[in-house]
Amino acid sequence: MEYISTRGSAPALDFEGATLAGLANDGGLYVPSEWPRFSRDEIAAMAGLPYAVLAQRIMQPFVGDSLTQERLLELTTAAYGRFAHKAVTPLKQFDEQQWLLELFHGPTLAFKDVALQLLGLLFEEFLGRSDQNLTIVGATSGDTGSAAIDAVAGRAKVDIFMLHPKGRVSDVQRRQMTTMLAPNVHNIAIDGSFDDAQAMVKRMFNDQAMTSRFTIGAVNSINWARLMAQVVYYFAAALQLGAPHRPVAFSVPTGNFGDVFAGYVAAQMGLPIERLIVATNVNDILHRALSTGDYSAGTVTPTAAPSMDIQVSSNFERLLFDLNGRDGAAMAAQMAGFETTKAMTLTNAQREGAAALLTSARVDPDEMANSIRWAWEAAGELIDPHTAIGLHAARAAGLPAGVPVVTLATAHPAKFPDAVERATGHRPGLPDRIGDLFEREERCDELPGTYDAVAAYVAQRATPKA
Ligand SMILES: *Cc1c(COP(=O)(O)O)cnc(C)c1O
Image (tube, rainbow, N blue to C red; front, side, top):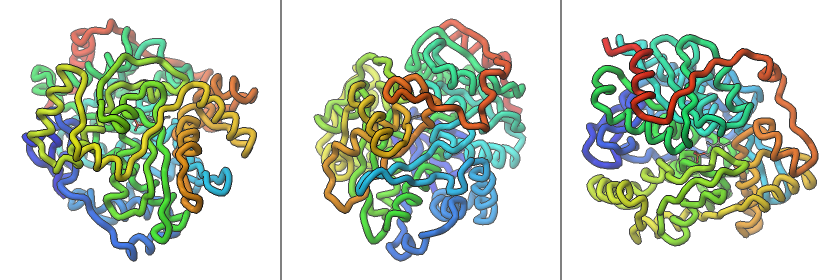
């Protein structure tokens, strides 16, 4: 399988190349040159497969020659063997129509483990084939950082530099990053917001002085391999609910548009998806874009669902590219306009193409809290604020009876105990596997919110190209 950039001018790469590159060098994002498709019979034959086997089947067409079937299965078995539930992503039922897909049984309690546990192994595999080192630079509003650090801590040939906005991630989120003491892990708290941190990371990918000395890699969901790994649980859930014989809808708490884009990919591959509900909090750029065509960034409002406090959704570009006839030059022009004015209008083809599968919803803080309460009172389930936003949108979507609606549970409630306790009066406890988090030693450096300070810090500590 070949990977091409959404902006049309970066060189095409194979899966190994796209995984190590992260962002394309024309500023675009890598996407497969075509969507592999499974027939109805092929999908039906996947029912009941163990998760790691299903993962190998779904991902092999994307991986192509970069890994043999046997090797890919070894990697999926190792990655998903670290999950605390045998089903990896178990499904729970709320009522006749509403279901919950628990994606938080990995080591750091958020869905990002599903993709990052595999990505850490892919990095190690591909770097082992050459004398290359990889310098991973990432920005996190909380969950990506801990999941990425857990996935690469102690791995050979990789250094990770993770920026988080100082004082703006929860104590659990911070400690999950800063208590990882492996020498290849570098935590940086910057004076600034998540968007500031993300802008610095993007700048470093385009900074010749850095890219000529270091091979810089990405763990944010601009990395295609992450989205690929997330396609698997859409299949896993739909198969359990009767696909391909019955269509299923999904409601996805959305920030950077990575998770819901994986659902879009599953649909392109032949999975019968009735609707994808894009649930946002009050940081609603995606809801405005999908409902009115206006994609314009405002300022970020902090909420109880911080992993969705995002104004610029990187992966939206992948959708817009696919819906605009995959015209890289047109996409480059559209994004150049957005980068100067922080606003753009979707084309008719983009609006109509999106509307065929996607519905959006904006969920305010009261609706979020009511949704946490409903899950507790109706089903005895404690759910986290991100999941609650998805569940509210799922229940409000008015889908036909008989269509199961699956809300993606993106974080364990214990990651956000204050919001859960305020809504229900019950404080969720940390699972045993990380129960001693608050006793562990922390290590983190603080830097001013300037690009130069961060670049100098990385340059001093990273391993230069051979
Ligand atoms: C990252 C994250 C999201 C948003 O996912 P995207 O792929 O960025 O849209 C939602 N909920 C939680 C808990 C997250 O960690």
